[in-house]
Image 1 (spheres, each protein chain N blue to C red):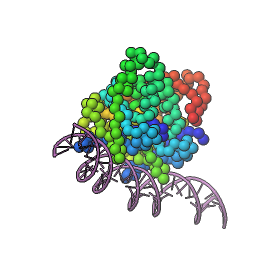
Image 2 (cartoon, chains in turn yellow, cyan, green, purple):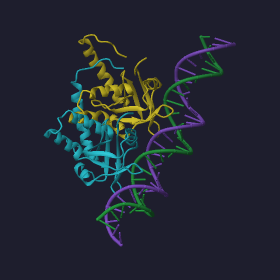
Image 3 (cartoon, helix red, strand yellow):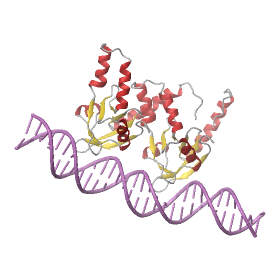
Image 4 (cartoon, helix red, strand yellow):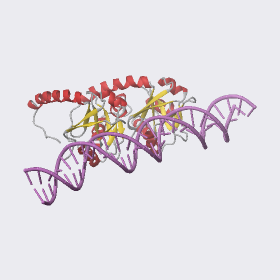
Length: 152
Length: 152
DNA sequence: TGGAGTCATATGGGCGTCAATGGATTCACA
DNA sequence: TGTGAATCCATTGACGCCCATATGACTCCA
């Protein structure tokens, strides 16, 4: 299996730690990134997370922009500056920062949702809404979009 | 990790010293630059800082401009002439000059924000605004970028 | 087919280490 | 000799690291 798929719900403990689902940890390990790269989603109240696969995706976007330009600063601020690298402990847990928790409205539980090259971390209630919305809109997009390789 | 990523908030002590985040220090050490190269951002009320990686980026930018031309003088003045090299003490702290503090509106706290090949130093309040702005505009820039395929 | 045993994951908590911070002492230079 | 800076030392508080336990799924065997 290549990427992050399926979804899992885990709890935060008293120190704010939460276990990354074992299936996702396996992907991160294979990916070779030490830690968990994550940042608030630009358009949703969720957190985008991943490893080198996600990082490469971001870097390839930045490669098209001239360094030292205001545009480059802007995008790299949004993607690198706002991001955080969380350490993963021996048990596969991370501690979410206050910034991240605030952005996603996370309190005591989170949903991990796989999106292939990355995954998202949601507050369970918001994820339920998002999921419903995503299903409706994806249906519309899939029906009038030409067939494309189904990436995993 | 190759570049400056994530962000940190640190305080200035009574002598105006502030600790460079350990993660950034690690990058600077590997980068091999002794000290901290920094200059006021041309477009923002922040300070650009980094090591050899940043210097190389500037140099390669200058390479595209005809030497001895007024344009070259202008750019090299803006990027080299205005810069300062701050000394890093044994604990990994630097003392920001008055010029720099004035430019960025820094008083007692600063945010270090990684932008990959360099990082920026902000007054926390201004960074919060800038961050929100960056997220909004980056979203716009990224979403109408042609979609790419073939991710890992 | 059912039950016991086994295993892996999720979860809880304690402790040591390091980074951030504050202060003091020494040094250089005017 | 005074002023500012650089180096050194001390404190503390967070976080990384380790060990212990619970819980549920799965296997294997009777």
